[in-house]
Length: 218
Image 1 (cartoon, rainbow, N blue to C red):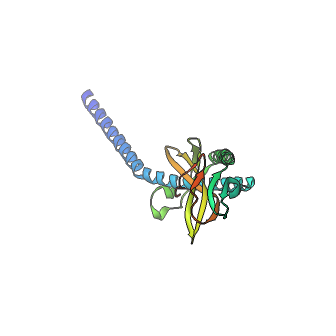
Image 2 (image 1 turned 30 degrees about the vertical axis):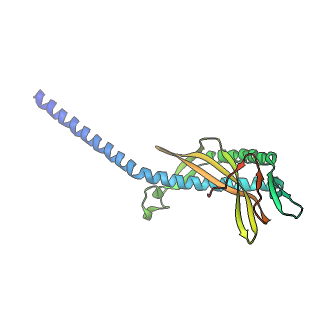
Image 3 (image 1 turned 120 degrees about the vertical axis):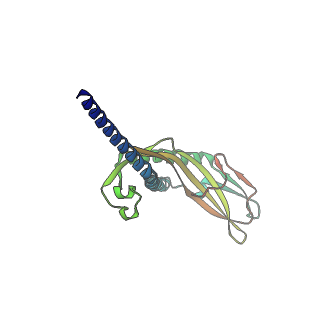
């Protein structure tokens, strides 16, 4: 009699164990299936929100500072009026970088304190449910110091004309977090600080400290 009860109890425990194992693998499978979708959706929305906020911040700060191209870059001409050299005002450029870095960090802190959301249907990966369902709240968290660099670019603007542009590029890493899931993504955006058209050949000298290369696409 005791042995029969023990066998019955063992069978019960075995069945419960099997059910728990099946539930575990089911949950694990669903998580593995939707994780790439969640990461993609969070990354996409996080990048859009951050890029929009940062671009707005930069535009507002540049407008407030009232910086023009010819304040940033000094053109040297010869006796015929031909541009022979460009010289960047590195003190002013560093002021621009410092001011925009501070304002960008402040804007990111504001974003991280706000509740952001994605419709639950959009996280399933099914197009038919996209944009539907209750909102799933998530948070943005800046993971590192905002990195700001200056770049310049020469391009053809017409016959015997060269267009010179100065860009500001902002790189940052952020995290998007929802209950039970988090992801990290890099966000890069660049904005034009100013431009001018140079008549004649590209100047043979460009003096600049802290400004380099050709502005990357983005």
